[in-house]
Image 1: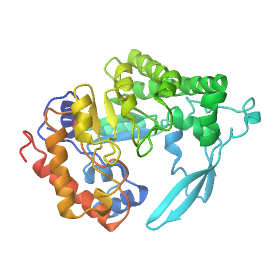
Image 2: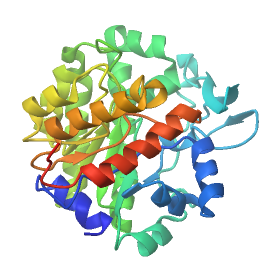
Image 3: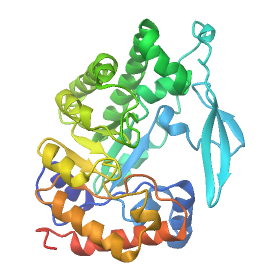
Length: 350
């Protein structure tokens, strides 16, 4: 099997030759892989073991948009580069709608702007024969809203300024449907939405608020985009604990959940509850096992996850979040990829 066949088989809840692999890479890790393998971009991701490739647009594409100390993106959000040991993160330092006096004059980005899909045609022409192509419109509703308003303001809006909250969310839905339609026209296989609804042991909002504000809008996005391609698959990203709303995502048509953050929800238990309806993408602990765990701890956890989640297909294994530029994290990631290639073969026998 090539990678495309392997991933599609797994997503069809059938057993491929082995469990497919995908890891998110920080820019520093990707750059290091590029130098080590004499590759660039997507070729470096493939060299690192990734078996599906992601093209993102919308606000989620702006985290590392420029190399300047500060920059302003198309949403008029100001970002600042913050150095840390091993690399750079970017953080939002200005939210354009923090004062609602700015709302009437605020101009939403153009979903059809000239350069929004630069490189996507070439990506699909070069790689789609062998790899699944994912079109990312993550940070879709909850996150895009608080990026514009600020977190505290947005959480208050959901309680005390509901008319505005509904209006803002509807405008975001329209924007991302149009982006999603273009991604589908180019030929992506999966549309990837995303909002971090979970904290470590609870959600940012009550399930009732999710049902009021977000569930019907995800239903609209998914149904409208399926009109464009009835076979399109939907993945959704949310860190943290979100078990109460997993059935709601299943109900509106979700196919793939990313990730199952093990310190918040046990992937084996989540698979027992929802594995018939969902595939899972990214289930290896990125809080302790990958960045700090011993070789023995890593292999023990990988055995547990493979035995508990992989049988029957439906698993794309990898870290629950980005691989960080630290020696232990990078070494354990290499170990994980090698272990899956060797022991993640079907039938699972560990």
